[in-house]
Length: 58
Image 1: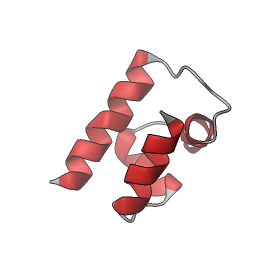
Image 2: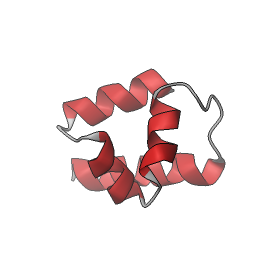
Image 3: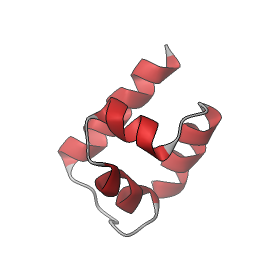
Image 4: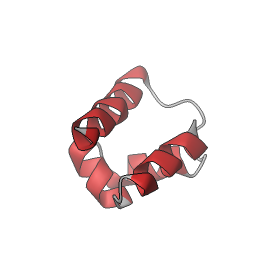
């Protein structure tokens, strides 16, 4: 999952900070998810990241 998050984020031209803000999660939480420190993010965190990607894609 982490690889996919990073791949999509970079394809959208977003920084880690940009996406964390759009997902309304802490920057440190996002970087931990993207860098495999957190292997199983919460459902809420995953949903917020997915929603942020949808908002950025439109």
